[in-house]
Length: 258
Image (spheres, helix red, strand yellow):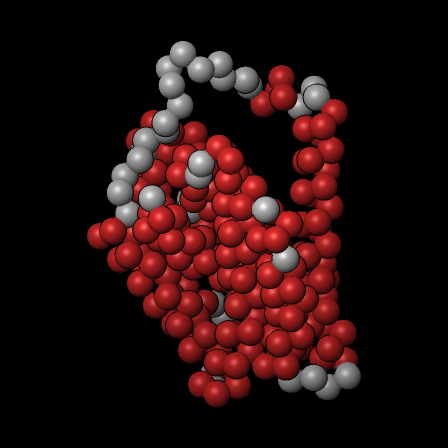
């Protein structure tokens, strides 16, 4: 069970790298293509938007066909799409690549969460969630950090080749070492539709908190780079600035989860 959970953490880390990896380059893209705020939003949020659309469907299908198929398939697609970034020569191309990348990540993240929940003991749900969320945050922080440093040393394209390589390595780990698992839910268990759950105030509160915190992170990662660039901070240092706050949040997930 511990090895399975470790593999899931590797998959989660790889799948969240893509969301913030482009943040340090947003000012450069704005200047190169004369992008306005709408294009910035489309480039940055396209990843999360398409990921959010596919996640419920991927989660439901994984209950029927097994978790490994979606985690492995999503990581493989993730690695392939990473190679398309250097080929995107317009804002439209980049927005499309971001959306396809989000679809790949959406095939991984909900299944990893479901699989980890099945692995966790009843008395360790909070701690397990803490480890998983910490990995999500660290992947989110590693994207801009890695992007800024690699761009400085090896150029723009190297960032996405490295991201694709990491995703492919994670795919190989999943392919050879992750046991398959279909939903452990017993047939006699009561399944409550989402439309019934949403009637409860505490469910609405949890969803509202999730939306607000996600919006805060997205605004921070999308527009702090522009503020930093306005005072002549280069992309590698922009990546560090973005990563620091997210790393602190990630490090706090485990103690608060426990």
